[in-house]
Amino acid sequence: MALTPIAELGVAEAYALLTGRFGLTGLPPLEAIEYEDWGRDLLLGRFLEIPADALTEAGITLGLESTCGSGFAPGTDDP
Image (cartoon, rainbow, N blue to C red; front, side, top):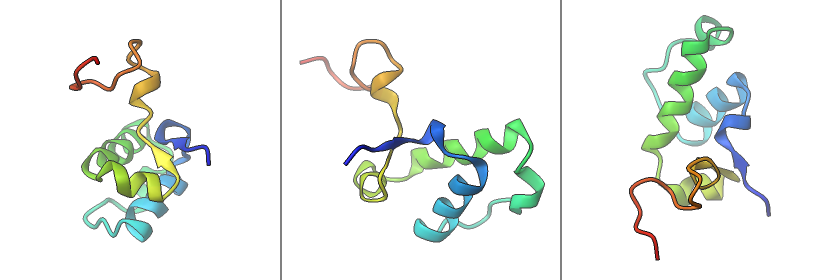
C-alpha cells in the first residue's frame, strides 16, 4: 500500500483526519482556516505530534524522507 504524504492532503481532508481519526481538539473551526495558508500550515504541523505508526495505519506519511535529499529523515543517523 502506498502512503500519501501529508503535503498532498487537502485542508478539509487533513482536518477530518486530525479531528476524526486522531481525536485532536482545540483546532480552529474548519471554516476559519480552510482558505488560509497559515491554516494549512497549522494542520500539517499538528501531524508532527502523531506517532509514525499511527500515521502509517491511517495510510499517510510525513514525507520527510523524500524532501531532505539524503533519503533519511532529519534527526536520524545515516547507516
